[in-house]
Length: 373
Image (cartoon, rainbow, N blue to C red; front, top):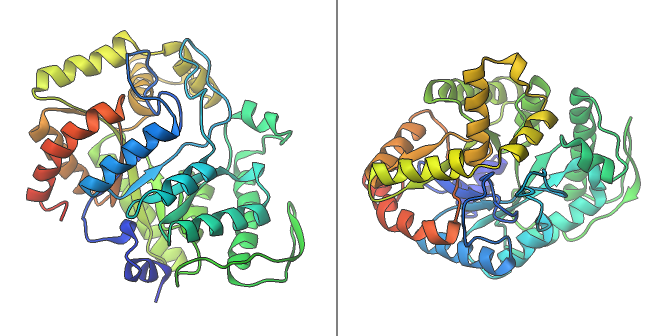
């Protein structure tokens, strides 16, 4: 049996029978994923996150994925500047829920692998197996500099992450681990308890998109997290990563994407609100700061392409926008599922205010369409 078979046998929500898994993204950070100054009741507090988790559980959603953030991106909103640590966040939410899967997003260069092993296994037990790690190699230079960690060259980050994962995976299996690599060294390392389920580890996801990143994900992880420009390119991405994992590593690799969702009673209302929070109230200064860090410059793209790229970031961290009335949103999620993607992290400006309408009006349509049980 594979680890995925063990997760499925244990009833892990990420391997249930729903054709399109659903989760939310970034609720541990101020503004979550919307780079906007639009009015919202959302706050990145524990109480707000418990409310969101309860709404998700009641409606049968699968997961919550946080963003690992240590400082904001400036601009009038200082986007993501207030943020909760993702390990304690996951442990606390796991303790007050019974069905949802929680992840801790970790910047690998900032955390010793022995410490990560112990923390992840502890939360795995608190959640009774509803836990996973979202592995990030670090990309925001000012954050890495906060830790006194040099920003490694892109491919070197994944070489470092491979050593890190080799240590963590071995510690999940046995004690007395000694490792001497190019980047990391441990001597006679121990970690107890071992993971909760027969899979022998928590669930693993990664957003690696480059050659090195995709190989790292295919070797170690259960899901590749990616952003779709459109349905056609999304289908090509799904096929590419699944084929890579199967052909190179003899593994099944699932896929997840992210989508800002604006659903209102009418298409007109939905489009007007999208225009309001993105075009009228978007924090374009913070967005420009992110583009600069990502080295996405206007001179490398047409003005139209660059503007579309920035608009996607303001709308929801670059995810594919789904905007419309309940029927239109459901139809677009059906189209999304038809790309072969296994799940979507949906982002909203105001989760607590918008989730009830989505759950009442869109979820029944997804069940009728065969995407949800």
